[in-house]
Image (spheres, helix red, strand yellow):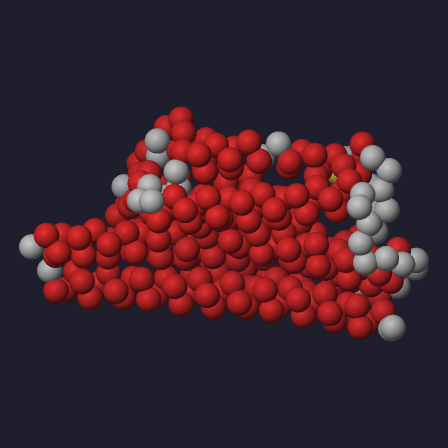
Length: 43
Length: 242
């Protein structure tokens, strides 16, 4: 296999992991904080 | 240190800091990766595969740095009973495990064209794999302690002790290439300088700094999510009681 194939595979794995962690952490934070604010308004 | 034990005070700083760390971190890691892919020359021996350096080294740094963070948080939890320390430990675990796995994956991809093998049971690779298992054990313990209602979304004392004891693996990973014969290269960046030529080395500074800032932002996001969940849970309990 060409050397570039290995380089692209390594970068793809890292990019995918970085994007997934960013998306998941951002979503979890926004959802939890919105829920907390909603409850604060109700109280 | 105890000034930040108050979640409201912590959140006042964490809210703006999340964006300040995330966007510059993302920009730096993308810029460093682009420079590493297109601006630096190929290595005379390894050829193009040397470019994996710019993501493999930061991944190893975050994997090991993450566990060091867990150990410091555990120490703060056990000695000073800092309430946010347990939350920080829990927030670090999943991204730390992810980057340990990325380090192993990119190392394996680098190893195939360079050493002719995907995997070798030598000191560096085995101790890094042990770190991944330690992370998985910590996550399982932390989740169990949350289910059992351990203090305010944090982790139990047993989990904190596990985090502290597991830190013994960090110097083993660091010194493994010196203590044992290994396919993995020896330490190329030390306090005395670097054996890697500057023409190849410079984008590594960008990706290292970028990934570190980005990792800090991810931990802040996860801590904010845990603190908000705690708030929701406490309110729900209060509403249920009437």
